[in-house]
Length: 81
Image 1 (cartoon, rainbow, N blue to C red):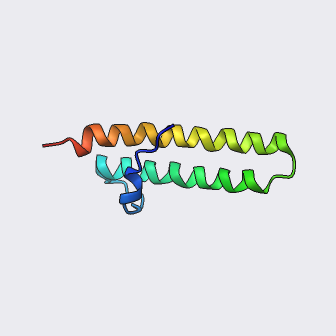
Image 2 (tube, rainbow, N blue to C red; image 1 turned 135 degrees about the horizontal axis):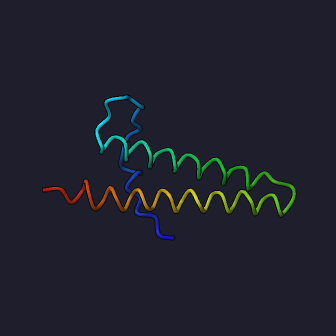
């Protein structure tokens, strides 16, 4: 899955109850990015191949989630006039 890398150019945003839509999308992207890094790191530390595959599957799911949020961000935030 192609990574749009939008989150690479965004700063972490702390959670607030009065967040803007853009901030909420940024927060979600960054959380998916961190979850992917977490699962990928654990995949590389696994002794058993089956366990490593579970972490790999989880890491790929997080990338899919991040990609979906990046597509929304690109469509609804970056294309605003």
